[in-house]
Image (cartoon, rainbow, N blue to C red):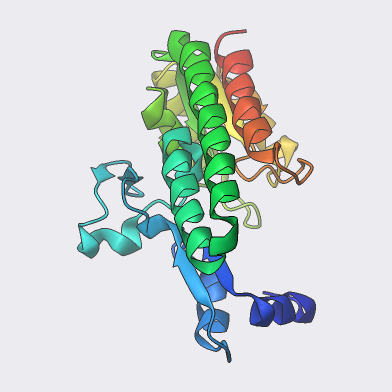
Length: 239
């Protein structure tokens, strides 16, 4: 939920960007209750995005029946990020036309950096196409599909709920059957649980952070986030 200071900032905004209700469910009600006219931009509706469904199958945004099933982690594909930058540029030009040239220059520079990031990830991850791994939940579909990574299963354990011995045993069996090299968890999961899962398998534990929760905010955050994810995949899958 938003703090009072955040709610005040929202009321004062002219333009508000968000991924959409598939991700920021807590924003639906506050955005509907805004007292002044604020333009809200739902980034998941940006033209040109490659949108994946939560079951991992590719869909185009025009398939409106699938909206609720759309995977909202769309920023994990740098080519989607390019489409988002161009959408942001156009929206800023409409609200603040006096700075149009600056927005065009900045977006051009940013798109160039994103293309370089994409090329570096493509080269860095190309040797990992066959390496099987498990994740704790399917947050990485965009990265996996873009760079042809071989996720063969997921744990789907809630960090606040106890996990039964039978379920743990079943998951370990699946990892052994699929010859899983790595089990990628996330910062919110206890290391003890991860160790219990890999016990008796050849899988190595590693951590992925799709939100960059421990990274310093700033203009390099996105690039650091994607590079760190690429490094985590390489270090565990191809040590």
